[in-house]
Image (cartoon, rainbow, N blue to C red; front, side):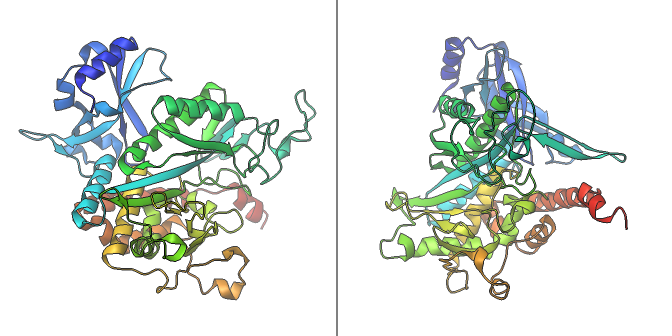
Amino acid sequence: MKTSADIQRMCEEFQIQMIDFKMTDIDGRWRHITIPRERFDDDIFRYGVGFDGSNYGYAPIEKSDMVFIPDPDSAAVDPFAGVPTLTMCGNVCTIGNEENTPFDQYPKNVSLRALEYMKETGIADRMVIGPEFEFYVLDKVRYQVSPEFSGYQLDTRQAEWNCSLSVPGNNGYEVAYKGGYHASAPQDVGYDLRSRMCLAMEDWGIKVKYHHHEVGGPGQMEIEVELGDMAEMADNTMIIKYIIKNMAAAEGKTATFMPKPIYKEAGNGLHVHMLLFKDGKPVFYDQNGYSGLSREAHYFIGGLLKHISSLCAFTNPSTNSFKRLVPGYEAPVTIGYATSNRSAVIRIPAYAKAPETKRFELRNPDATANPYYAYAAILMAGLDGIRNKIDPEANGWGPYDFNLYHLSAEEQKKIKGLPRSLGEALDALEADHDYLTAGGVFPERLIEIWLEKKRAELKEIEQIPSPAEFKYYYDL
């Protein structure tokens, strides 16, 4: 645990001039406020820094005053600040007469309360997760939404659509449509950039497992990090996105985690590997269980699959999310589980054999999610499965040890699918969220605000004519 004295030593070592505090809004975007180093003292950790929470999407105006309490253990030198700057994440409290109270809607508080609830149930005392970060690095993007013009344009030099360009520098090494998986140089033009991104993550204290080019030909990348505790990994998710976006920008490029930024190309997921521990022992391992998983692991899977439709409201909270969740792009579309099967929404990696690494991954989430809410919701759904002994096989959710994309139309009708739109996911959340509010983890008011906000967002987007509609209907 770092102390204020440790922070001061860091400031001396790195000649820090500014202290930066990064807060998370309701959507999962970082916002920040910065003070001169001279204004930093011990009182910051007790009284915090005041700000208007209503602008972050949380509180009504009449109760909007909040304080940010920095976490000294999160202190790191911000590599993207020109002026030497130390940055910290932290938590948010509402202001009381005597003491401040943790704000129950703030994303980090929700995730911490989910972990406390897990311990209270006696099921486990530690949740470990490992997200996979998929994103596109593009050379340029522009977009506009207005009454007289609505559209977007993007480009990347390595895309197959540029192979016929008669310009200097066209060397014929463009990457084929959906042909980017593990592409090597010279096709993989982002190789060195990804390595620098990974080194920046390591400098920030995030352990990287590996990186590679992903399936999407026009610059899709993946960086996978080592497994870590859920609360820390939620912070790290914010840091990783920050590093990737800023390093791309420094190279004159742009990085996006949009689930489906390019039509007919592979989408960006945020696959989440997960496992539980109790008293240092893995909860999910059983040598004699299906694919080496314990009864508790199967119940956890059952909880995820039972609540998957409402879960999507937090793990896939954008209209663009459901343009990714379609057949033919290695994205899950059906509710089921299996070993080594990427067409199932829950996949059990066959390579993870050791008791302390035995796990499964949830494949539907994407990075438009607020990671604190998404990881907490995943945990709550799984705990509900264990508490209520929800057996995925008995409920007809698998195991599906075959390619679900290759089923006949008649067979596909027998298998339940994921929501096909954000609207369906929000309706499911409204009808099914008791597992989230259990133990006071997700406040009922947060669910209400989320539904109001996302339905307003959906309504606006649905009213905007798209270029495809002009293609299909303009001349009718």
